[in-house]
Length: 289
Image (cartoon, rainbow, N blue to C red; front, side, top):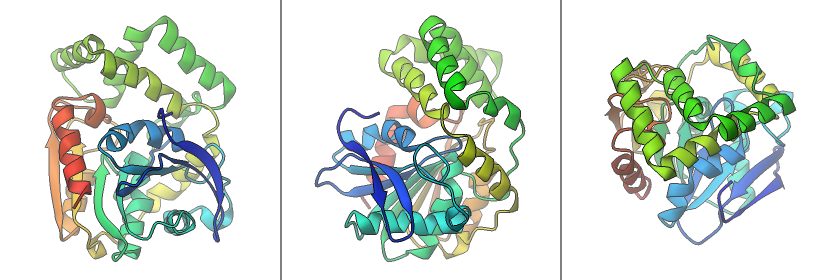
């Protein structure tokens, strides 16, 4: 969790949402987490935005952590309505939007639904079209108390092996490139600690949301062509989790769009990859549009 701000359960006119809010008077950014994830993931991934003077609002999507999953908030379109209701309840009219990975579907829908309210949009390695999870049983190991305990023990007892595992799992890299990236992460304390903290945001009470995403994503049909906000797509061409083609597809559909391709990166390159500092600066500039 980020050092400042607070996590609360918010009652909106549409449903209950758990959300992290960094607070502050800066421009508001709604951060929509991945699959699996939660408001803790949004808080961690949005720390660089807070340091840049922005207010980060990061909800847990339905079925993740303490946001209930009901039939009224199961689809990406319904979740987009819930995102908007959260910002309404917090008194935020106009805001920038940022998403990662499985946060793509509801975020693309939200940007299409609210052209007058979404000032700018950054989609990072985001799902934009039908997507099927290849190894759901492997993800399921992470959920519940045993999964949270496992991630904590791995990070504590085998941190370098854990970093290596993550790079291998999240990037389709050559052995040389993977070794170089692991070395760079391990040699940098801030990157190393970030990775180990991030692992806790994909384990624990997240199974219901993950199962729902598995059911929703294979039949996606998102209104990308009607998104009018300026969009920055950021994606590693060697991402082995969400293929790069999801961003090229979105780039071909969205009228006001720029694609930033990261070479020799992983699914979390914005935070741990080549030129990650420059990439994050580019994101901040775009969100201030």
